[in-house]
Length: 197
Image (cartoon, rainbow, N blue to C red; front, side):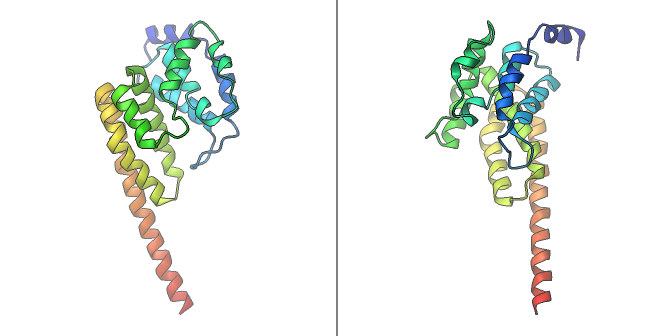
């Protein structure tokens, strides 16, 4: 991190947003861990790629709170600090609403999302793709990687080629992982069949 970026971060008050995100601690993820850690991982991904915009980082810390905490009081997020309205608007852009299909949600971001929403969605997906390494349901991994190629690759292509490169590597590694799991399952099935004979 460059000194200039560090100085920009130095004036960013993230603690109130981290406090709000603790509402996600009980929300378990398929690959283990919880949604609170995922928020911070998404923020770390953004910083890793040099994004230090305060609104973007604050939104990354709470990007799933409206979607995953139905009882969340939106006014709480709107009243954190002077940037809260912009943070709230960005969170809404990356929030999938009840009744909205996943393809419709991702298409909305792809076609109509702001640059910040697209950058946030790509960082979010990088975090999610890394977490797939702890998931053993091959159908879920297959669906998620195909969704990444179809919807997230074009977003990343538009906003950040380096992030796109990481996503491409993650898709390749997850496909290899699925192949290895499938071979393991096949081998286990053969051993089980031989044992029962």
